[in-house]
Length: 98
Image 1: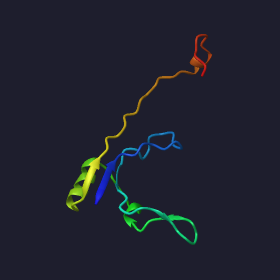
Image 2 (image 1 turned 30 degrees about the vertical axis):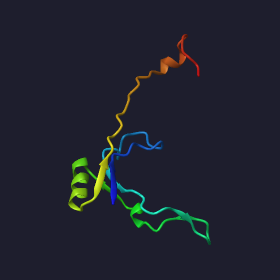
Image 3 (image 1 turned 30 degrees about the horizontal axis):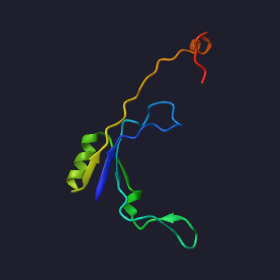
């Protein structure tokens, strides 16, 4: 069973950086998804896809996978780029519109 360890980025609905320092273990899909013949919903027989484990540190997530004998891959978190902005830049004479 393959697991993926990563630190999720903030969602588009968040302004701050709350709940972004955690590490998540998710399991990869084993069986294919298919539509249910009666309702048409997409489903899978693999229930491990519904499991999402959260850890405070990357080391704790790696230790969990090693303890339970899981193959894992670690994705490095993307670094936050801060672009300094000022409200006065909206009114500069040489600003590029686009």
